[in-house]
Image 1 (cartoon, one colour):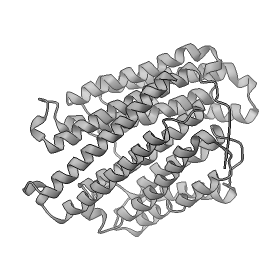
Image 2 (tube, helix red, strand yellow):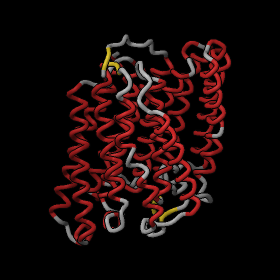
Image 3 (spheres, rainbow, N blue to C red):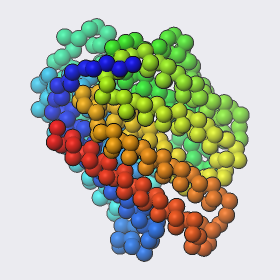
Image 4 (cartoon, rainbow, N blue to C red):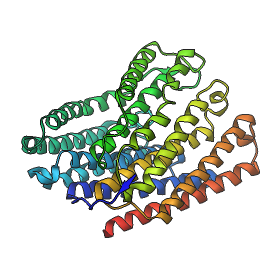
Length: 413
C-alpha cells in the first residue's frame, strides 16, 4: 500500500546527519575501490598504509559513518530536537561524530587498533568517539527536557527509557572495544556462535518493527501478540544459548539460528498493515528483498559443511556485502526517504546500485566456494581469480558512482 504525503520539515540536525552519512558512504566506497584494486595489484600498496590497515577503515566507515548517522538523524527527529533550544547544537554533535571518525581512521592507518573487528577503537580514537556520544546524548536530553511536556504520557515514558538506555552506550563501547573482553565464539571457525548471530539480528528486527511505527505512515501493522511474543521468546532463546555457548556442530546453536527464519515472513507481513508514502517504494521493496535473502542464506551458510568450506574465503566477504551494501543500505535509504519526504536517489541510480551489489555478491560467492575447494587462490595466478576480482572492482565503480550521485543530489536539495 502507498499513499502520498507532504514532505516533512527537515531540521538542520537531521539534514546534517544525513549529509554526513552520505559523505561517509562515498568515502567508504572509495576505500572499498582501493581495496579491490590492491587485490588485483598488491604491488601498488601505498607505503605502510597496506591492505590490512585499510580494511578496518573501510569496515568502520561503513558501520559508524554510513549506517549509524541515519539512526542519529532518526533520534533527532524522534526527540523533536529541531523544535527545541538544542537545535543549534545538533549539527555540532554531528561534526563531533565525524571528527572522531576521521581521527580514528588516521589511527587505524597508523596501526592503532584494538584488534576486534568493528570495534577497532583504541586510545585517543576511542575517547574521541566517547566524547561524541556524550555530546549527542546531551543534545537529546536537552530536547527531551524541553519538549516532553507536550507529548503523550506513553511517548514521554518511552523516550525517557530510551535516554536511560542510551546513557549506557559510552561505557558499553569502552567495554566492548577492550581486548580483555570478548563474547562467546565458535572455536571451530573463530567466528560468532549461532546464538550471537541470533542476538545481533534481533536488534535489527527490533529496528524494523519500530521503523513504520515511529517514522512511517498511517496504520497499526499486522504484528499482533503472537509476533511480539515470538520476539520476546527469541530473546530468551538467545540468552540461554549464549550462556551455554557451543559450535555450529551443536544442535542448540543451529536451533538458535532457526529462530531467524520466521522473520523473513513476519516483517513483510507486519509492514503490509501500514500506508507507506510513495517515495519509499523503491527502498522498501529492496530492503524486504535483501532481508529475505540475508536470513535464508545466513541460515544455510551456518550449517556444518558449508561454513567449514566458506570460512576465511571470499564467500564470507560476499555475505558481508549482502548484509551491508544490500540490506543495510536499503534500510538507510528507506529511513532517509521517510525523514526527508523525498526518495534518496532516482530509479536509475538505485537500480544500478542493487544490480551491482547482486553481481558482486554472486561473483564473490562463486569465488569463495572455489577457494574452499582448491589452493589455487594462493598457489598460482589463477585466471578465475583475476576475472572475479576484476568484476568485483567494476561493481565497486558502479556503486561508487551511485553513492556519489546521492550525495550530490542531497546537497542540492
